[in-house]
Image (cartoon, rainbow, N blue to C red; front, side, top):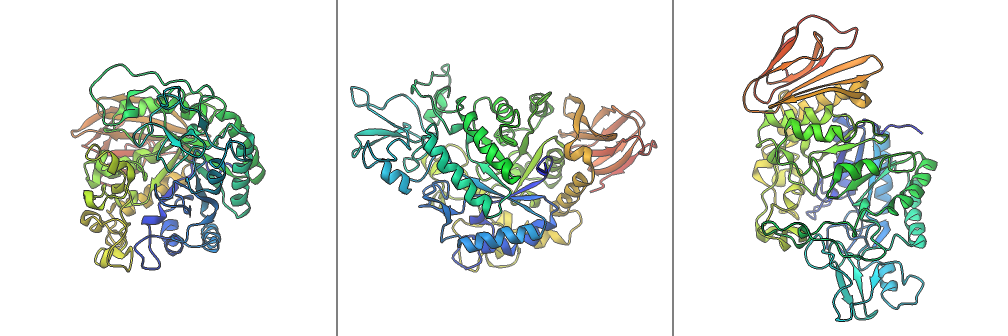
Length: 540
C-alpha cells in the first residue's frame, strides 16, 4: 500500500463549525463540500472530519447512537458519499473519526445490554457489581467529573463511563464487540474513506481486575477529581494492542490507515508504543504539544528524543477541537509568532495536523458562560478555558453577517469579533497574511522530501535558539528558529545553502546565523545547493 500519510499535511474539519449550508446555524456536510476547493487551495493532502454520525449530542457527536448513519443535523449518507467523492476529485484523502471507547446511552447496543444480565449483548459494555456497602466497584474518576461508574436500576449493577454518564464504555475486551467495531470500519471503508482517526484509542480496554488507581503524591488542590490519580488501570492496557492488530489487518486489506489519539500521563511513550510495528497504528498523536503552555527548545527536544530509533511514525498538532488554539496559547495572538509556530510544526519529522482556522491565525474564541455548550467547560467553570473557544464558527467573509458562516442571525456558538477580522476573504489578497504564508510553507514541505519524510539530525537547542537538519536521500534542509523575544546567534551545522523561506529578521553568514525575535529560516543545504552566503530579511 502507499504510505501517503507519512509526512502528509492533514487538515481537520469540525463540521459543526465549518460552514452552514441550510441556515440553521450549524455547519453540515454540504457546507464542507462547498468549501473543499478552499481546503484544497491550502495544498494539504487530506482532511480529517470530526464525528457527523447520529448522536443525541450530549458531547456534540462524541456520543454516537448509530455508527453507520449521518445525523440529520449534518445531512445524509448521500451527502457523506458526495463529500468523499468531491474530496477525492480534488486530490484529498478522507479520514473520518471513529469513537470506539464508548457509545451514547441511546445506542441500541446499550439499550439491549442494560435490559438484563443474560441477553446477547449483556457483556458488550463494562458492568460490575457494587461493593458490599453499595459503593462503586473501584475509585476510578471520569474525565468530565465524578466517579466513572453510574448505577443502573434495571441491571442492579454499575456501568463504566470514562467521560459523561451518557457515554457508557464499550467492553472492547469482548471479541463480539471487536467484530462489531470492525464491521463499522468495513462499512466506511467500502464507502471510500482512506482512514480513521481513533478517539482516545488507549481507553479502549480497562484492567480486567478493576484495580484501584493509585493516588498521586499530595500537592495543591486540583480542579478535577481524576487529576488526583495515576491512571494505571482505567486506560492503556496491553490487550488494546491485540485489537489494534486486528484493525490493522483489516485496514491493510483496503490500503487504508489509522491515526490514534493518545490521552495518557506518558503521552510520548504511549504514542510510540502504539505505532511500533506493522501490526499497530500507522501513526498517532498525543496532547504533548497541544497542552504545551510555552514552546521552547526543551519541549521540542523531548518530543524528538522519544522517536529516536523508533519504528513508528509520529503525528503532531498545535490546535484541535479539544485544545486552546495555539495562536492564543503559544503565540500571544501575534501574526509573526503564529507564522513561527506554523513553520516549526511543518518542519518536524512526522505528519502535521492543521485545525480549521490555524491557517488564519485564529485566536481562541471568547464564549461567555451563558453561551457555553461544552459539558466539560460547564462542569468545571470557571477553572480552565474550555473547548468551545476552539469550536466557534469559521469566518469566511469579514463584512458578511455571521462572517459568512451561516445565513441565520446567530449560530450554535457566538462569533468572536477578533476572529471576524481574520476572515478568509480579508487575508486572500494580502501576500503577507498568515493564510498565504501557510500556503507557501505547506508547498515548501511538499516540494522537499527531506521535510516530508526525512530523518532529523544535529538537533541543537540553546536558550531560545533551535536548529536541526532534515535529510532524505542526499537532500538536506537546515531549519533555524528563534523562539524568544530577543535576537540570537546560531552556529550552523552546515555552511552555506539557499534560503527557501524565512520570516522576521534573518541573516546567514558562513558559519553562523543571526535571527531576530521570533524569526526563522529554512535553508537548502543539499550537496547541489548554493554554497554562497545567504541573507534574508522578512521574506514571508
